[in-house]
Length: 296
Ligand code: NAD
Image (cartoon, helix red, strand yellow):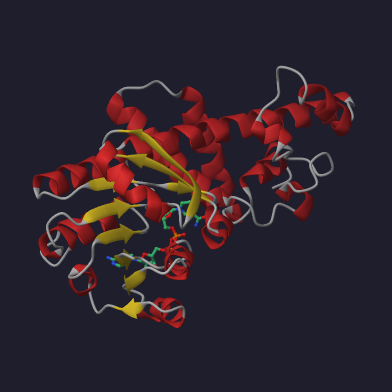
């Protein structure tokens, strides 16, 4: 079994660390919010007093932090991972962060002789608890092969997307596509309402025609056609608008620095910003149909 340092045991990192413990790994956890360490300690983790303390004897380091600035600080500062982990320790950052930070930390890790993977996830807190996350990985194939058996204890789909930063790229491209397809799906239902076309009829026709997409068939934004979709629960739970907005902003930053033209991604960012600014950041992102109807 492997000794794993887990940095950042919040909404996602907490249950991920608990699944590693369940699988028999030794986990040394650290979080700046010390109160969060109790829950993982109850599941068998050792509490570390600092990043340095957590990584000292680790064979693998996993981080699950809010944003690029936290990842840079945890890995690059003098009391951070690169300065204090044993040479050859496998480093895995599962946070969703900007491409520039992901590439900068990759480069610094490689220079210091550490194998490094960016491995952001999809699946949310439910997936973290159930151990069914998807990991989208960027880095060397040898690092991926080493990481896979560990990531499999927290997820059910582990994919190597390409080299440094490719995991982050896959995540933001997928979520930008998802946001655009959801808004398009919502617009179709709003137009159908105005035209007197029954929502179930639109669903039956579009879901077996060229308008078919995941936003329609799995996450239908009107209640009824797909009983498991958040629209049937008043848009509670699911994938929060605030988290979608974070990913859209990362996609726009990446598009700008890479020189990609993404006008619909930009429009989706504006619409989800408006929804969050109206105080609905906690609503599932399919709830944007209410804003399009003028009801938010
Ligand atoms: P969170 O805020 O609950 O957890 C992040 C943890 O990092 C916090 O407990 C915080 O105290 C800790 N932290 C911050 N700076 C630190 C430092 N310097 N050293 C140690 N710990 C530090 O966030 P979360 O919901 O668990 O999300 C984590 C990452 O996963 C984010 O990048 C998010 O975008 C991504 N993500 C979240 C979800 C979701 O549904 N919540 C889904 C997919 C991806």
